[in-house]
Image 1: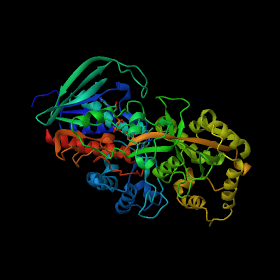
Image 2: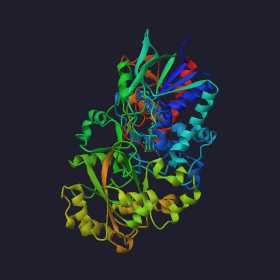
Image 3: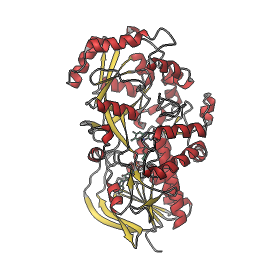
Image 4: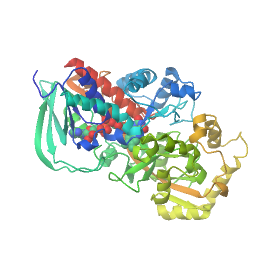
Length: 551
Ligand SMILES: Cc1cc2nc3c(=O)[nH]c(=O)nc-3n(C[C@H](O)[C@H](O)[C@H](O)COP(=O)(O)OP(=O)(O)OC[C@H]3O[C@@H](n4cnc5c(N)ncnc54)[C@H](O)[C@@H]3O)c2cc1C
């Protein structure tokens, strides 16, 4: 069948690049269409921390971690909590994805030059029982080079394919509709946007200078989620989490606008689990924003004390790094959309990491000399110190009285009582003397420090928060930060999209965040972290390979 290409990929983010390069490797002619300029190629993945969920790796074994497919699947299922009829394909994707993460994933990436930082991180630690939410063991493998390091092999392959004529990039082409002939998706049409010279990630103009229409035998939708569009986030906000937050910050660029989701839905594709989202509760306003409402997520170590807006400590096991959705649920139940960390200089120095490639110049720049300073430095990493000094959400004081006063002034709500906060911190501090204690958070610290990775760079030696030797005291106002869309288009394991009648829509595929990272929601309700980039790799690969086979 004649056409402009064999396959059109909508979206030049990670999922789109993977799908496109798998298809060109299979000998197909591919067009990648993206509404942004060439400078933003790679989408969100470029900005990411590059953390990957991998199972039973040499990196884990070197650190004494015993992991397995069975343990990881147990964790995934306990975390996902699949409980709907529409979870049929998401669950199948979950099983296939955990097998990929325990099998081919690492070697496949490694063969393309991808490398991993040797200290494996421990995200989403749970705190319930063995079948409940969370990673039983550390599994968060940070890409050496962070986000750009995960984009690089696929961008390189795509550019090689472009040079040899198998791939064509169409930047500033915004898809507004899918074309369907006799029930088969066979192309896209839309607007050509004016050229842009904005920096990567900045909002670009939506001024239309022309239109376009392209034909192919298959279309792969890899257009990302809805996190940059707060109206859509609020519209889809799950009832179980109460009313949507009044104030949110954005963990993704504005191009994560969710527009293409509506367009694909209008073409008959079945969108499932739209109320499942993955937003963070440790968001801080970027003092040097790149995109509108730009927020950064703190990847916290386990020691900061966490208080709600009224000054009540979050209940166990909602400690930093334990259960993102549980924390969001609790915070929304308080009737306020923010919460507080209180910590010491010793804790910030060892435990605060910021998610995002630009916030980690040592790992992103692949500099061993700078990275080693994480373990040896007297202060926190420079980007964390910059937030401490310039960030709108940070307060630093020498004593608790002043700290609480400044917290009340910052929120403007005057909800915090000095005596209440002091009593809770002192009670926790009394638990520090013994290694066997009843405070579950302090127990967690002892547990964490049995893992060498945490002891080296992630968990401060347990100390009293009010010990001036570990000061000054620091408070951080934590905002809700939008990030990932967990629901998406229902797809089979070949990434083929189902229609509302339950039949596959011929010619239509979906991958990455638009497909709920596979199946329409491979994560269920929660993520084990590092699973989003991995979901783009796996679903993009399946989409590219199966579309190539079909055309
Ligand atoms: C700061 C940050 C840190 C992160 N850290 C991690 C991490 O450590 N580990 C992890 O697993 N995940 C992480 N993530 C999440 C992960 O990066 C994303 O979920 C993933 O990259 C999404 O990729 P995608 O290809 O599905 O979509 P996107 O990257 O959003 O790409 C979609 C592309 O489609 C284009 N597009 C959309 N609509 C149209 C249209 N109508 N016409 C034409 N083009 C269109 C967009 O312009 C965009 O280029 C992080 C994300 C961010 C922002």
